[in-house]
Length: 163
Image: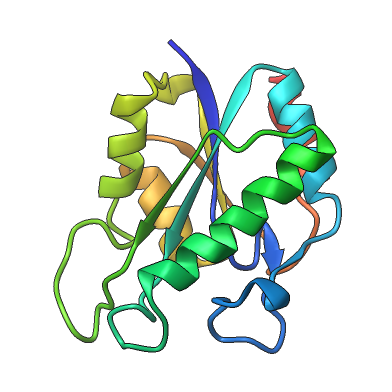
């Protein structure tokens, strides 16, 4: 079985200062130390999986195509730095408009990734910047952490690889 670190996108991987939704590649800016953090996890045999709510799709603020363009930039930035994102899961629904079980704080996206990537939850983690991230990780059985939005996760990743 594999071990993994699940990461929220906006506020953990990328800086979302000044933007409620990040849906344009030009607004996608990586947070400090995120490239180094992911490379550290990769070098210690952790799969890194992104789990993100993208409710702006449901609100017609942006489209699946917009999200795909941002994710393409995200993947390119990591590939060009020697880091690897194993997979990305996103929920297009918004809780004000429709009920779903994939949107965090529910855990369907995480559970799907656990199954597809053969993840050992006892050796895996979730890092988010919001209470709903923390709750989704806990619901899926992961050790979960809530960080300050747009802060470095490098110190936390160093702790994880020591365990």
